[in-house]
Structure formats: structure tokens, C-alpha cells
Length: 127
Image (cartoon, rainbow, N blue to C red; front, side, top):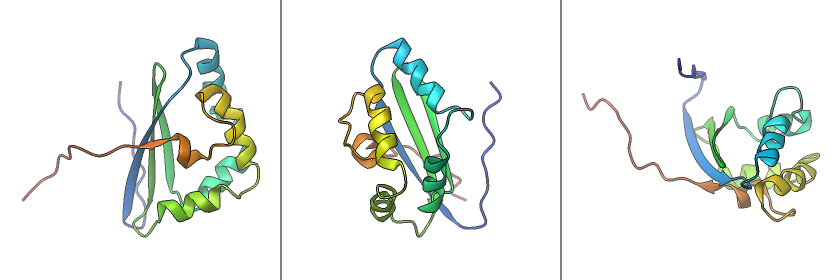
């Protein structure tokens, strides 16, 4: 594995990391992967994520465990952005659609499904 090149942004950023478990069903996991592929992504969802100020979003998978990494400007307010995101076109429809694969309530918002992770280690140069 060569790793993943990280984007740089013209503003200072902060990062959020969240986790969520999918249903333990290989067919449902394959379906979840499908709907997150470039070919099947919903344009309105990508546009909404950008519209609320998110600069980059990545989802990683290992078995049933998902980890989402979100980069946003330093001034970004998570709750304000999630409140706005929930009102954007097709967002509620998307959340209900993927909830069946995630094992969540169909009416759950994204910020109700994904659990925020706490950073417990950070390697940095003290010099």
C-alpha cells in the first residue's frame, strides 16, 4: 500500500473523525460500497456536503466498521452544518436509503448515526 495523498487547503483546517457499523451482511456491505462509488453517488448529497462548508470527506472500511474523516475550515461549526445539511435536497431520502444498510432508524440524521471519535494520540514535533 502506498498510502493516500492528502489535499492541502488555502485555509487552516480542523478534522473530525467518526465511526459507524454496517449490518454484518456481505450483500448489504457490497450494496453500501456500490452507492458510495463514483458511478452511483447521488450528486445532491455530494453538493450538500460541500455547501455546508466541508472541504473533504473520506470513508474507510474494515469488515463492518466504517471510519469517516471530515476536513473543514477552522471556523466550521459542526452542529450548525449538520442542521443545515439535514434540510438540503434529497438528504433525508439518502439517510433513509442508507439506514437500511447501516442498521439505523430510517429517520435518523447523519449526525445521529455517526459517532464522533476522540483523538487519543497525536505525533508532532515539539521543536
